[in-house]
Every structure is written in C-alpha cells, then in structure tokens.
Length: 515
Image (tube, rainbow, N blue to C red; front, side):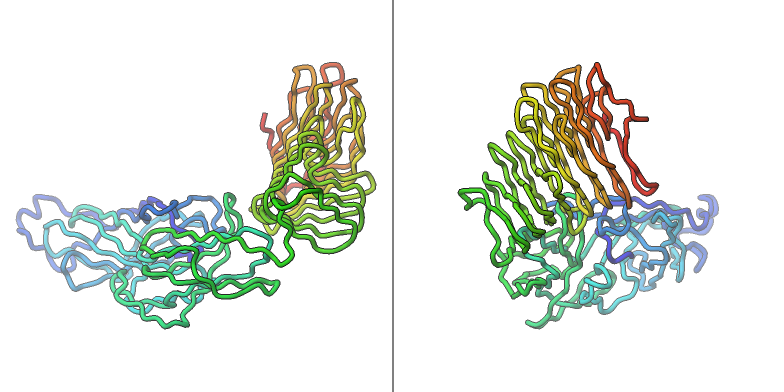
C-alpha cells in the first residue's frame, strides 16, 4: 500500500478467479467439498474509515499529496476462511491509475464445505512487528483488518477498517516549522491485522510526515497506536523548538482522525490586532505579521521581506498594504487576507515591484480592492484619476483577487491597473490565481487581470502578462465588453483580444474562463 496516502472509501472490483461447479454436482457430493478443488474467490476489496471529528477519507486524483488511500500494485493481503487454520496470501494488482484490475492468489486457500462462512483478511499479510518510526521519510504506516461473507460459489467482498489512529497537526502563525514528533509507541505487534501489543518507553517518538491540503495548508501527520497521546515535540528552522503538552487531553481511537491546531510565532512577530496605526517599513529586513487588524502596512523603501502568517488586514481608507517605494517580497503562510474599503488590497507604486510567494499553493492570500481599485495593483486617487502601478510577480502560492468600482463609474480588475492609469508587467509563475472583474452597469466591464477603465471610458495600459510553469488561472470578467485577461471595456469601446486573453501562456499552464 502506498504509505504516503491517506485513507478513502474506494470500491475496487476484481475479476472472478475460477468458476464454481453447478448445484446438481454438489447435491451428489453432499456438504463436504473435495480438497483443493474450490479456491476462495475475492470479488472486491474496500477500505473504510470510522467517523471522526472530520473524515480522513478525501478522494483526489492527485496520487502524491497524501489525500487518498489506494492499493499499490503488488500489495499482499492475508486471508482465512471461517475457523480454518489455513491462511492464504493474495496479491492486489492495480493499473497505473491505481484502479484494481484483479486479485490473484500467491498462496490460495480453499473451501472445505458448502456452508457460508466469514472470511477474515488483513494487511500487512504477515504477522509480527509493524514499524511506525519512519513515517516522515517512508510514508504513513497501515494496519488493516477486514471481513467478508461468502461461500464456494459466491465471490467475497472484503471490507477493511483501520486499526491505527491518525494524528494531524495544523500550524498557524509565522514560525518556520520544519517538523513534528508525537510521543507514541514506534512499533506494534499484529496478528491477522489486529494489534495485540504496543510496547513503549518514555523516549518513543514518531516523526510526522509533512502534507499539504488546499483547505488547510501545510500540516503534519502520522498514524499511531490507539491510546493516550501525552505530548508532542515541535522543531522550527529558526530555533523555536521544544516538548509541549497537548492543549487538551487526547485519546486516540482506531480509524479516527485527531487534529491538533497550534499557533506558533517567531519572536518579534507583530500582532496586527494590537496595532493602533499603520506599520511603516523603510529598510531591508524581515518583518513578521499575524492576527487580525484594521491598520495596514506601508513600505517606503528598501527590499524588505514581509511574512504574513494567517494575517488579516481590513482598512477603512487607503491601501491595506501600501508600497509607495521599494521592492518587497511578501511570503504568505496559511490563510491570509488584505482588503480596503476605498483603496487597493495591495498597491505597488510605479517604479516599484512586489513579489508574492508561498511555501506551496496551499498557502493563500485573498486581496480585495474598493472604490474602483484592484485587489493587487494600482488604486483610484480621485474622481477620474488613478495612480500608476509597478510590476507584480505571483509565484508558488494561491491568490484570490477581486476588483471593484466606485459610484462615478471607475472600474478595476482583480489584478492590474485602476482607471486609465498604467500598470507594469504581471507574472504568474507556478501559482494558482482566481481573479474577478466587475460590471456594475451593463455598459461597462473590467477584466479579471489587466488594465482598468474610468468613468470617461478611458482605458488603462499594462505591460506584458505572462502565465507559466504549470500555473492555473481562473478568470471572471465583468461582462463581454472586457477581456478575461487584458483590456477593460465598455459598450462604446469594447476589448477585442482574440478569445479575450491578451497574455503569454505557456503549454504547461491553463486559463479557465468562469463566465
């Protein structure tokens, strides 16, 4: 079984191995069957999980993200019919998509009479010690016990259940966590897929495997023996580490997911909820922010590195992150948001640039503009005027960006320029972007990404838009008068880019139109 995958309820159908004899023949033989004549037929196998605080079964097409449990070609299961002492081994055969194609005997077992019986099955196929110690490198460990009912003429469907518990640690905040360990037995002894003992010592620790999910971001997981979980150990790259008791007592149960959520911040992290004014950054350096606040961040120079760790900024006026000069890099960790009622979520001035990046695309930033300003880019400064904006780079992160309009009829895309102002280059590199334009009136529309338009129907300009390296862009324009990516437009001066996309998109990337 692919160790690094989580568990999912998957029905897997296999071909019948051998045909059974007719009822007339059996009537002549009585209830006893000839030895070695009627092998067990396995018609299917399934893996299910019991209910937990949330299902640990999440089906996905991605076979490398730890989201689903599938059989690996060549996995072996042990089986036994009824009370027989004879045990067999069967091989699960799967195709390149992980679909079971057949279940074939390596060491078959046979029906000895015509009476229905319970078939017991287990994984791993052999009894003995199962190591839980190296799950960070080798993938999650599994112990499965299954049963099914049938007879010599009926294929048996085996339903497996998990005998280990799953522990998941989710982190919030700005700490750069490099690993977790849970204090639990690092091996257990099994017979026919059931745990019979799990000797442990106070020093037993299981290193957890790092995973990433779209809904929760980066987390750490391990399968452990059911029982009391006393504590965990955290390791961070910046030296923040130690052994900690759980926030509340936790008893692990077989087949259930148990989640620990922690907020871990670097020393010197700025809590936005405690701010009473805008935080100004004027020089190079590392700056860490978390929490929820109503005062923004202003960059006035240098090339600072800004970390947002589950940070949420919502300002009533001005730009939430205001880059008036300099070239900052914004690192997104977890789920973050920046919004402005009358400005841009992130404004980057002309002759400046901003790079927005994450640890993976599970790290997310939502940016919302207001009063005719974009989520990321320029901003509207007056009735018919707007500020030019610089270059924007989005890489290895998930962005959701919303444009806006004002009462005068100025429109902005989700990412790009405001009104008739200019915007620099926009580069989306190995990232996932959801961008939304607006159409407050049927005669005008802003693009999802690109230039804006003002109340006088003057269009803004923009530099090259590049989408590359496996990026996924989901674009929703206001209406058909604008491009999806490119120009905003109106009934009198509609955009006319081929297919509504004025961008360079490499073969590995996709642009999906949402309307």
